[in-house]
Amino acid sequence: MKLSFLLLLFLTAQVALYGSDLEALRDVYEHYKDWEGRDRDQVERDFLDWLEANPKSPLKAEIYYRLGSMYSTNLNHHREEGDSELAEHYYRMAWKEFDGKYNSMSFAVLSWLAVGAKDRTDFRLEYLGKETQYCEGGMSAEDVFGIRAIQGVIDGRPVPLEDWERERIGSFHVENLKKEYERLVIFIIEDSTLEELRQIAAMFPQTKAGLRARQAVQEHDVKQTLSVVDSLDLSEVDGLAAPTKGREEIPPVAPPMIDRSGGTDEPKRNSGAVAFWAGILGFFSLVMTLVGFRVYRRRR
Image (cartoon, rainbow, N blue to C red; front, side, top):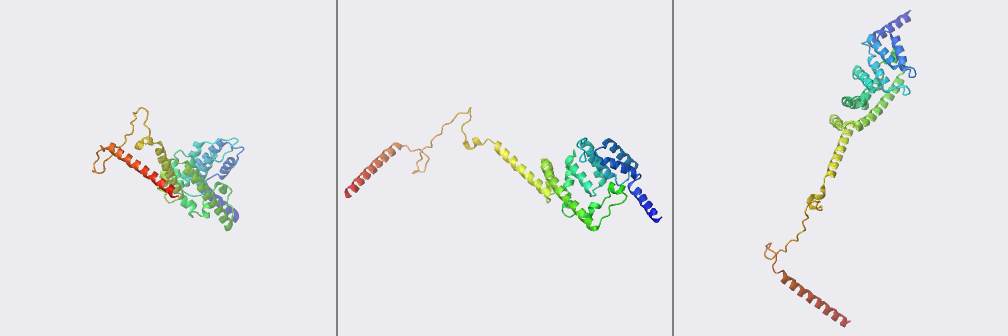
């Protein structure tokens, strides 16, 4: 009798915490998991009807998450198609209900919104702001078990785990989360607009995401500068280019000879005399060379 009383007390507490008619929730959840035979429209109506009857249930966030996944990541691709508008609608509601609490579902919700939402920028910034929590020891293995899920509730009790099992499972989830976070950061940086990259670099100057964004902005600016330089017509700078078509070509003019003796810039007027005496000197040099050559041969 004591055992029956404890069971009744437990069930009463379950109903008070998670909502009435958990058997109905079990039926909907099982229908949701039936990839081969489920009717998504019916699953959606049944989930929403249950929430209408249990508006304060802490399972609301997960139900919205399940509805969003049913139209995005949890698809039977042989017979179902995604619907990004419905997925975004339910993921937004799920994110609001999770209210910053961590578990694998809330992480999946924020990850999807950071990539698939129409006004994704705010979600991207919020996602990238989780680096400390997700990758630098801000989250422990115990956080993985922080929220009871539908499956555990409808089963009536959490699966009993030894301490070492909880630590191992929790650590496994945490490590996977870090890898997933870093993978999505790379995608976000590659997929972001220049304006989004500037925002990320400004908001997170010391994080890996912020450094990646700053590097991407710098690379863009360098390419832009090189593109502008390449587009300039440098052919006419400093008169290096040949005259363009339609312009009169001006022949080069030789500079005048300058009289250095008087320190003036007046051209020499006796250039003919200079040429005469230069010729005489050249002839005299030639004669002396020939005389020297003959003397050299005689001595030999």
